[in-house]
Image (cartoon, rainbow, N blue to C red; front, side, top):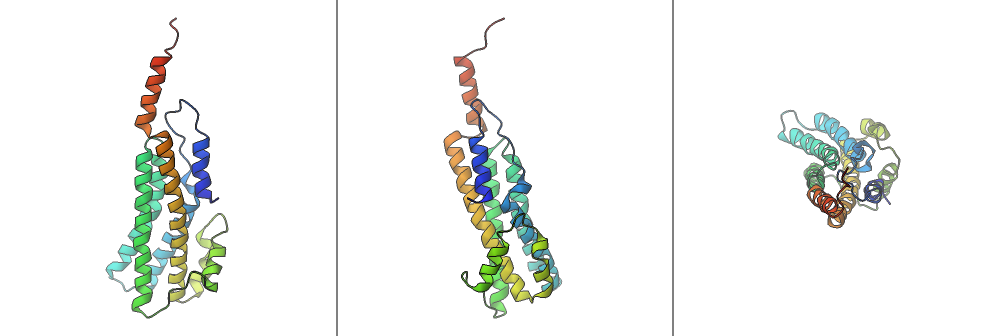
Length: 203
């Protein structure tokens, strides 16, 4: 079970009857957030170093990477009061990273570079790096500073795939929680109904 799925399950199983406001998780412990932060750090450096100054793709790639990272964080913070908002923002993060993935693929394609096969030794190596926790840019710094841009772009693609896989798991868990327990409105309604059925004793 991935850290993100475990995070969702811990919140679900830790719920007590009568609880209206769910506890907010620390988004920095989410593996999906940690990987998205690495993707942002990598993309910021890659875009400024290997893309032409004034190229609109620089801002677009950095903004997509930032949106992925920020929306995971904001979605986690929104969990306290709105499951719907958490699901929506996590989906926005997923879509932003998918857009970034296309940009990296475009970079390789128009320069006649190869996109690594998912079962290649290179992809498997990045996959092994991706299993280390916590995930930080320092795990990848050496490769970012010593490898050619086509290798760095492929590493970014691998990391984005890993992050999106975790986000897909996270979204499925959130949607299941919402179907089983509802959002804030539903929990408030249940609390009112319990109060009416079992009013507190009069003094």
